[in-house]
Image (cartoon, rainbow, N blue to C red; front, side, top):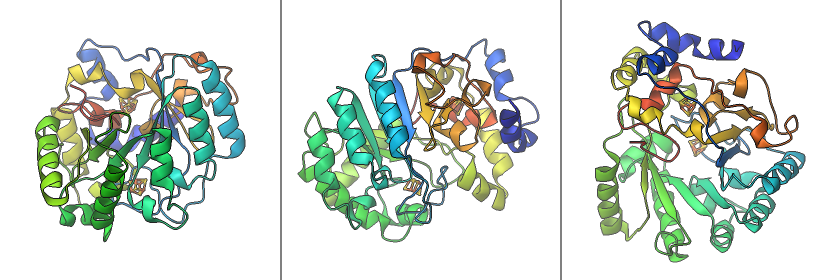
Length: 332
Ligand code: SF4
Ligand code: SF4
């Protein structure tokens, strides 16, 4: 539990009147893991981009990748687990892991759904020329970041020319059937460009659909509106701009107990590139271990060995503010 205390210490200094654990109690709720149906995997920290808000702190200079032994171990664990129906693969840019295609192909052969968290621009990197075709052939569900439908806002958050390349990538995916074929789901992710909560997801989705279709002929399935997590690069940015305290207060003021019923850690666990197991991707980035102790994919026999306790700290307020937030968008 030391890591929990350490990781939350900075934010705890900000929230003096309460803590996430107290807030759960006051709301007369509990937070326990139910059946694990989704496995989220971070298979590497290398990325062709280096976005300002990145909670993984990825970038082109990183070399960390999940190795072949861990990939094989995960395939063994997944093969014997009938409850896990979805494997959600993220990074960095997951496509840069040399085992990515073998891994994805093997999971699909088990009949499980695979989500690829794709940054879109990766599809135009050297060596990735046929990645879009590979994803379509395998029927991979693509979830892609596009924090706005305006070039100015996207480039400000994700880097110069990212918007233009992202639009080209979406057009390429549409041409392969993504966004229109029922077996080729293409979802987009919005996150705020600053220290504010996302607007209502449904209205924003309508705006995105209208604007992207009118301007570029682009179609997609769903928009996920995700709250910025006050950790890593975004936390540093808030701190630098003197906004951390206000942002934490905003999350606390908008605490929504109904969102607690659907936070993603209730049904999923997260695995790091080194095989360590966490309650969620955010706890992974804060090095808060699952079950309050270090477990990895080699120290368990099956995912059911992980107990139902979820380690929370005050960054969790980002999951329960307003409409709630998860890697699948709003919660209520
Ligand atoms: S594309 Fe995603 S993983 Fe890469 S730097 Fe940006 S936010 Fe991080
Ligand atoms: S940050 Fe992680 S542990 Fe905390 S509520 Fe969100 S998903 Fe659950």
